[in-house]
Amino acid sequence: MLTKNFLRKATGNWVRRRWLDFRNGHSIYLIFIMTFANFITIQYKLLIDKAPLLSSVFHSIWGFALLFVAIYVPLGIFIGYWHRKSQWRVEQDALFKENEIGATMWLFVIDLIDGRVSEEEKLQMREMLTKITRRSIRAAALRPSSTMNASPENGKTQKTNPVDAKVNAEDM
Image: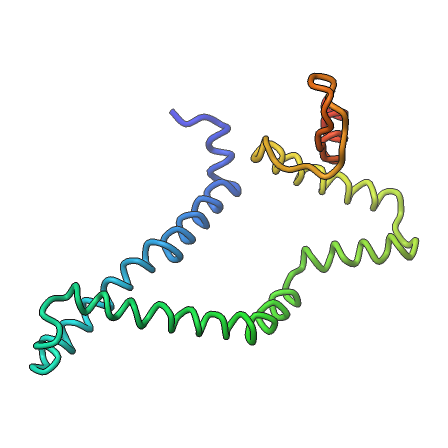
């Protein structure tokens, strides 16, 4: 029988996150490999098997696949490099302009600097960010930290994150 906790997760973000994980794994990794192999197979059947001249050069699909990969991968790297150097900024600018959460955060920072943020708004923002950091702390128990503290166990200096210290103090 399904528990209330599972039902709560199933109706909330849990299912949507699993759906996102599935889509990313499927489209970025699995389909990439399958379409690459499918493309090589189709090209071999349409080009090599039908052309007697090419058929005499490539006796098997493996030779064709090796040559294809030897040409295709560097070409893909070159095009990817061009994309990163010329198109990346355009894409990031478009994504930045659509990022409502980022815009809200930056507006809050500007208002904070200008002194237009009330104590209630500061508290709301702190609570929201604390919830987010608590989730990420639980998800990544051993993550790099940002400030230095002396460890009483071994006498060596170790890094701790100020957010962790604040969260841990509130939990106690």
